[in-house]
Image (tube, rainbow, N blue to C red):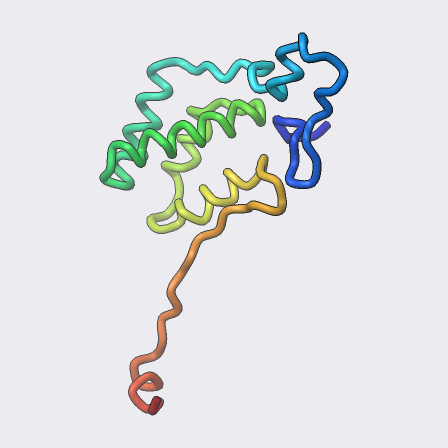
Length: 128
């Protein structure tokens, strides 16, 4: 069983040449899985990301991505939220990138950029 939601990939698109009348096949199975969740779950996840990011629009987008990914995997979004809340400070970005990459095509994965901290004693002795 594949975790991939759609039949389209970066290498090939879905075969829609059989029948244009079959709208489910035409729209690439977009509506074949019910991604509905309760308003309480949605509000809790949005509130968590709003507290984490400080931006309401970013929180809505992140919550939507997490809910979609959780439901696509057959997981409870509130269980995923509980896992996020248990993480150590600063670990959310790496965990979130890994979680969202589960259903992504291997050619377009998400990553977290980190800055390398140099030793100040070594940095001052390097001449450019």
